[in-house]
Length: 138
Image 1 (spheres, rainbow, N blue to C red):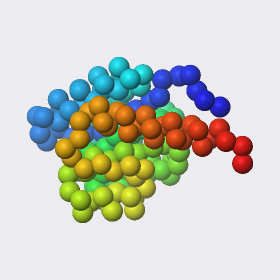
Image 2: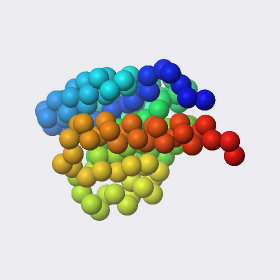
Image 3: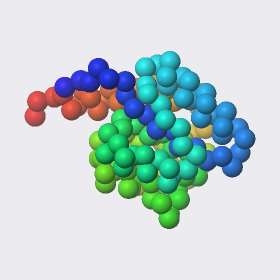
Image 4: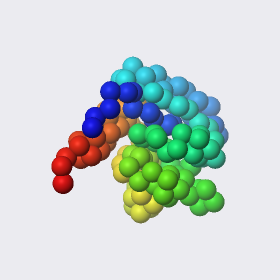
């Protein structure tokens, strides 16, 4: 059944660069304008804690490459174990990392540069696809 609630989206970007603060704020604003309920995190541990508090009831997670490849946390793998239906969108800076992200379980990997609007549109498609497939009678 399709939900009429706003899709919940986590944005996980580290703050090693002052531009990342701007990126997360712009993404959160665009997601909100497009009907999402955005949550911002500066590291994977915060994200995972909140994800568990919400019992994995999150529609999508946008993660930057640096956090996604953190072998200590294994954020993508851990999220998929808790909720295999959560859509994970990784924003990568290098082509080499795309394959690794898909192996970890990412649903979509995009290379920078990418506009926040493009990210929002791709995320909406991912969520829509999941809802459509989930509603099909098998």
